[in-house]
Amino acid sequence: MTLLGSHISLKAPSYFKGAAEEAVRFGETSFMFYTGAPQNSFRVGLEKMGIPEGKRFLLAHGIDPALLVVHAPYIINLANRSDPGKLRAMEEFVRLEIQRTAEFGAKVLVLHPGSRVGQDEETAFSRLLTSLEETLGDYRGPVRIALETMAGKGSEMGSSLEELAKIRSSFSRPELLGFCLDTCHLNDAGYDVTDVDGLLEEVDHFLGIENVLVIHLNDSLNPRGTRKDRHANLGYGTIGFSALRRFCFHPFLERIPKILETPYVNGLPPYKKEIAMLLSGIYEENWKESLLPLDQGSPMAATSSS
Ligand code: FE
Ligand code: FE
Ligand code: ZN
Image (cartoon, rainbow, N blue to C red):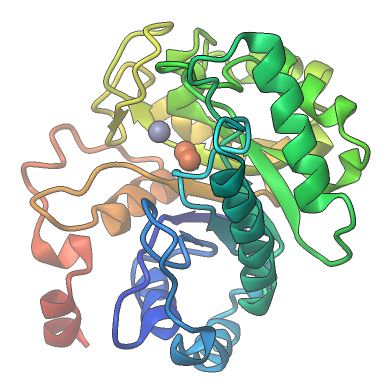
């Protein structure tokens, strides 16, 4: 059984419990969430998030909370030391986020490597490493950081496998760092994602396939190498359904969570439909047009169907 799921948002009032229910409704065997809004660092107290209830629900449905994935907010930039006060707050936030990840039972926190924002490459790189040392240098616990492959939009770092490998090998505790392969970002950064075996061979060469902790399974709106980062629904982009499906059943990736971050359709998550197509291998042309609320697992559909 491959590990396949999507990004699910934690919403009031039931937060983690509600997310767990939604994941099961979509047919997922893993999922990813932000512990609050992705674009800020405001966080609701863990005691209000329904964690024990969510864990119990997941275990009852055969999902191991240890295989869930947390994504750090994307405002975090550990490479920018222009404002020391702000940077220290970010380092502190990442440390807290690692603790929070563990509280949910998860073991992987996805982190964007950072942005150079006006600094030259070398300066940004050494600042990122200093921040990683200060944030993780003395960490003792079960969580690993998965550095995400980035599209290279603006001054984003981490758009080449070489650079990501160099971050890991330059860090004093490389065992704490793994990687998240985002198929849209890899495509936009110039990699041929349709050649799955070739890509994974390259990944193994630079990163070590055993250090791949998460796959973000997204089609891309843009051609290879355009450095854009615009996700598309499965089959609606330049990568295509069949290449993306190969990630789900590749023997190297079976026990790695594959997480959809594809856009909502008509304001609703399309993941139930996308997952069903990935599992069956049957792609329905123009599936978005025929999407029923039921296929999107909306709360209305859920109450009327169960
Ligand atoms: Fe990301
Ligand atoms: Fe991603
Ligand atoms: Zn993206």
